View 1 (cartoon, rainbow, N blue to C red):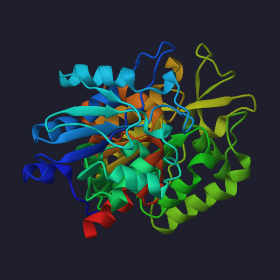
View 2 (tube, rainbow, N blue to C red):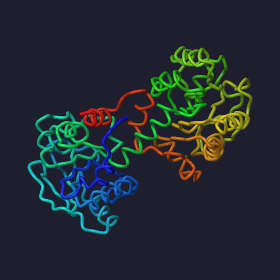
View 3 (cartoon, rainbow, N blue to C red):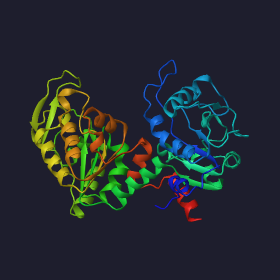
View 4 (cartoon, helix red, strand yellow):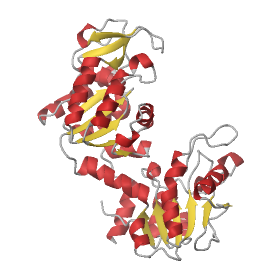
Amino acid sequence: MNVIRFSDLCAKGQAAGQRVFIRADLNVPQADDGSITEDTRVRASVPCIQMALDAGAAVMVTSHLGRPTEGEFKPEDSLAPVAKRLGELLGRDVPLVANWVDGVTVAPGQVVLLENCRVNKGEKKNNEALARQMAQLCDIYVNDAFGTAHRAEGTTYGIAQFAPIACAGPLLAAEIDAIGKALANPKRPLAAIVAGSKVSTKLTILKSLSQNVDQLIVGGGIANTFMLAAGLKIGKSLAEADLVDEAKAVIEAMKARGAEVPIPTDVVVAKTFAADAVATVKKATDVADDDMILDIGPETAAKLAAQLKQAGTIVWNGPVGVFEFAAFENGTKVIAQAIAQSSAFSIAGGGDTLAAIAKYGIEAQVGYISTGGGAFLEILEGKTLPAFEILAQRAAG
């Protein structure tokens, strides 16, 4: 995908003295007192901001935070805690500016944080008048917020239509490159792991990937539905019996291409869903009526690990078992370690996946960790994200 890159503009000196408007993703989790409990997104936004400052630009940054009501600012909607943390990370004061749509005063070499953009009336529905007003604030618009790239809002789409120049920040550009490498031009074999509790939430992803991947590894409740489709009994495990035909269709679509959906040959079961439940390894054909499948078995995990080590590209979305419980984490752990040891280019995304990556300490071994949950899923569904689309249009002139 061809987009203008902010790093290229800076390298050519085209950002010097310019008013640069950066849409970042600073939507951080907060405690009841408003303090930030996890600052990954703030830290991830720093390289783009620093790049703009180093280039001699007058820098404005904004983001949404939480779910404010448009036109009704409340203290809990404020980006004040983010401004404080950003200031610490940048080693400078970061003033917070409210009511900024009508104008912002910022000099070259300075940075200001513009208050929660979703408080502005018309932001979510991408009101054209608002978009045009915001576009007048800047000479260069930079989208560096992949987490909101699947939404066509005022600060993610509208302003990009009307700003003199619209480009991708380093974080967004890295996502575009990683997604292209994994899905548009993958090194084969291409293996995808799609796991989670429900087939219904990932059905379009499974269908889309079944047209492209060489191996479609399913896990969690999704795997249970596929086991039903393969004629296996799953006891009282979480599954969606009404989607068995859809699962069969995915299996057949893969078969028709000479590809496969590996069905577990052994599983880890328990009588109750609890951290202290007794875990029993059983053959997939021996699941009792009162069993709950909570993980893939060691034989299945070893087979999948061997396949992943032979892959050229791996896309990972979702743990394959209840990895939060020690007795049912082995499948996810083995798969995580196989991805870490594989020479394949790997891209991972989704909250639970990131939690598993952190738990097993394999951050450095994963080729690319996506910062967007919903946006990452929509990419896997084969959709073109609005933020990508408008930046590509602007690059094409």
